Length: 259
Length: 265
Image 1 (cartoon, rainbow over the protein chains, first blue to last red):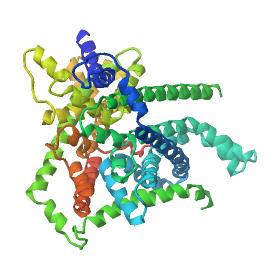
Image 2: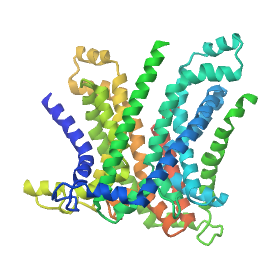
Image 3: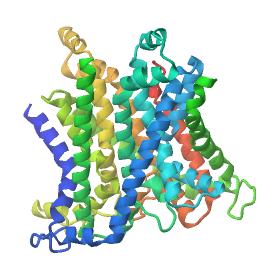
Image 4: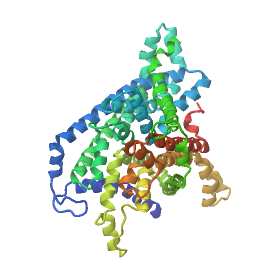
């Protein structure tokens, strides 16, 4: 069993080494990623002094929150529509739904670029927002649909028998039941949006940029330790997002258990 | 029909962002750079330059997928044997939430001439090597980025495996290797297929890695699409390559028989 421990340790080591390597050198006053001179927080100061970068961070957050919220709303209704669809349509709808999940980013980006150009939508905030909504919807659907299928249809029948109208059935029965799926979908959409590079790169145009696109152009210019500082901050942010998500799902499952 | 009214935005999404883009890509592939209708893009695609590029893309994608599988399967297997396996699994997934470009950027430092890897090579006596901008670094970084997506489905498949089947094989006298070959592996094949799909398709179209890590030495179909759309502005040619990528993708989906597309509900 010693060998298996060693193997796993090696996998985890390689998996985390680049991340910690970045974080370690973000405190290097030397300005390179290979020779650690002395401890400094200058690079963090540089990040916080860079107004342009902070605006890009703000844009990225706005895009992520807006797109995942809208995608969640559209996706939830889409999942319900698929749930109620006739059997032979279900498969077609699911296939159409999944196309954007399995498509390579480059194709999504290129085809959306054509779409926005033909539709006369100026490349920038709107096109990026629309693209992010578009590629987040199928993920939300895939997160919500299993919850709907898990739900016993007798709940809905019982509510109807007791005199609930469509709206009441939706808000008082269906919605509470699928809430964990909605949360999961929202968080997935959020991380997809924050993480996306390729699609955004195609539809962003000049003047508007998200963090991923900005990191790409910075990285192409070579090594700059403010990118390291930025990545440390992002890593901590992601970590806190994971913790929030974990706590939320735990709470949701506890609530579900109490019912 | 009234019942479906709430899903109008969803139907619009399917129409505008799923069906329309596919039609547009196919439509654009029939126009040359001047905007005249022609088949010249398809002719160009079947010239040695592009066929070679296609072959290279598939070769690299195959390499990346195969190496990922060879590393991921034992990892997933050993993970199922650990205590607190959910926590370990979370730790495997966590790096996927770190921005892909930052991970690539980290390798610029690690693989650099004076980077940590070269320092290591120097100390064990191999000596400094040019690591960045080589095929090796491209494949390594790609495997690094995709491996969690291979581990995850295999882990899930192994978890679903009924342990009494393994006991039964042992009781009937099968060796460890035979048990693996005849029982464990065939029963987790769905997970392997899902993992291969999740790795192969994106690695066909990587373009940021080829630019950052491989220094344009490796040109994949994805790089070519990006080049045509954003640099040379030859959308027709870009769309043609995209058409072939889509065909390849559909082929892989059929080949790996995707059960996860929900037939089983």
